[in-house]
Length: 332
Ligand code: NAD
Ligand code: TDX
Image (cartoon, rainbow, N blue to C red; front, side, top):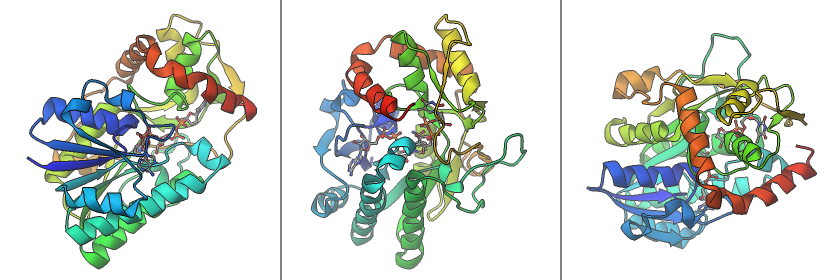
């Protein structure tokens, strides 16, 4: 049994981590620390709030972090500002949470000699050319493009420095694009599903040729557990699931899954500095830790996700109008 502190456990991936852990590894005791920003919600933890300790607070708050880390065995650090488009409009919360917040976690982990797993993204590596056989691996040089990815790259570097200089016991994972239940409607897949459910066309940035390497959130979280159980301290593991698709293909699949004309989408203004392609080589995770994705058919995982949004309108409806109003102001 471990006492696990889950930062950002009321957000998309963190909440799915909590649900999965309680379902599959009920011996663990979970504490969630979450600031409940626009992206986090108690509703993401419906049905399990009685089985965990929930603390509303910020990872930037030194005293709170210090106390909760002291009371835990392991910290799984998901909390972050996570949306590229928002980081282009106002980078400041990204610097605060992703850099200063991670620094606070590191100092507390160092002081109390606890285990840390830092959850990061493949975007720290920049982007790849279309049609290039190359993929990101653990040895790809960092080359982030947006304020979001630069802040995540910086947080990874802090973790690496604390491992080397202070000898903390930490691992890092860099995962590709997640999809699944409880993802905020600002993100690509939920935005398009809920647009169609509202009778609006999906919105494609530019020509939609940008490629993302999709992984189901449950596969990501199973990989995090594999790293917690068997990962070597100080190591980085890339997480992916062979899910490369361009954005136009994904929109067509969503429209088809909802019984609509696959061409019924709208092209909107492209994202500034838009990364072209992400792709993950997860050989190290597979060979060293024996992990494999369970969702091997993206079309099937996507259909399940479409069904989840279609049956959980009460969950996404309150966020939808304000999110779309923000996009409309930017011509997106
Ligand atoms: P999310 O935006 O859905 O959730 C983030 C959570 O962190 C929210 O609950 C929010 O309230 C909380 N939070 C924000 N600032 C905080 C603060 N200062 N203190 C405490 N809590 C705070 O994000 P997500 O998609 O679930 O991403 C989780 C992590 O996974 C992030 O670190 C992200 O960089 C990483 N990641 C995401 C993806 C993806 O595709 N979504 C892929 C790879 C890595
Ligand atoms: O309406 C849209 N139309 C569109 O074409 C939106 C919101 C996005 N897009 C495009 C931009 C990207 O090429 O879809 C792709 C995916 O966009 P996002 O969902 O914003 O994800 P991305 O920018 O790729 O970053 C995601 O994956 C890596 C997560 O948001 C990050 O937190 C994670 O680190």
